[in-house]
Image 1: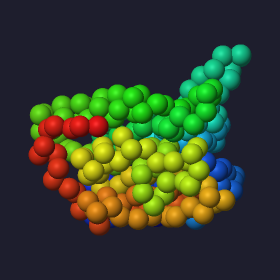
Image 2 (image 1 turned 180 degrees about the vertical axis):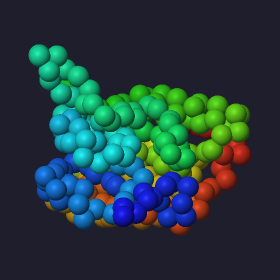
Image 3 (image 1 turned 120 degrees about the vertical axis):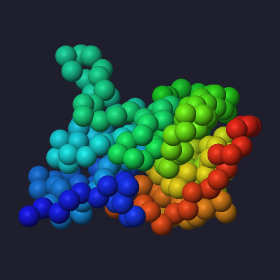
Image 4 (image 1 turned 90 degrees about the horizontal axis):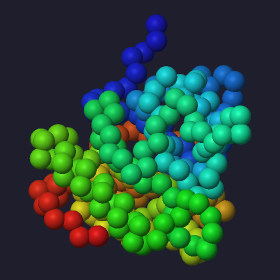
Length: 234
């Protein structure tokens, strides 16, 4: 008899995190065998659309993703670029999925003249201000506050890369400090950059580098009460 899947309302809800690298433990014919039950999949960017579709096809759970900076999430069908099927692009959105409120912001701080998946400080300010507006509307309606922020680039802090292309995003950090999500999931920081798995901010937010494949449990983190302040300066 198959065990009931973990629910986000459970004390410890399991999440599957993937980013940047099509991990062979996931990209195999027998997947998801030997994988514990999870409530949803969070994909933190730079994963091929075909890989995202594979995960969604093999694992009947919500798959939420944000685009990275490599532009490989799109598929080409009959010469037309299309979004991968069976998954949800969370970039610039706030959604409630299975009892968890998840916001998304893809791409990275601009580091070269050309190339997709990059944003200027002003574009980041605009993007996070729109996410903040969506969260304030939720509060006015008495709905659940933010649980998870899914991004590609890291915030400022221990996970930011040492080079310009992998630096942290200041606007994201201000957003996290204000809204205090229980969890921040990002990608972009690879093995060769000496990635660190996770840390906890002073405000109590757990920050996880999703590079490759990870299963994490959500439930022990405490929610900040900063939603009481409606004024966000970023």
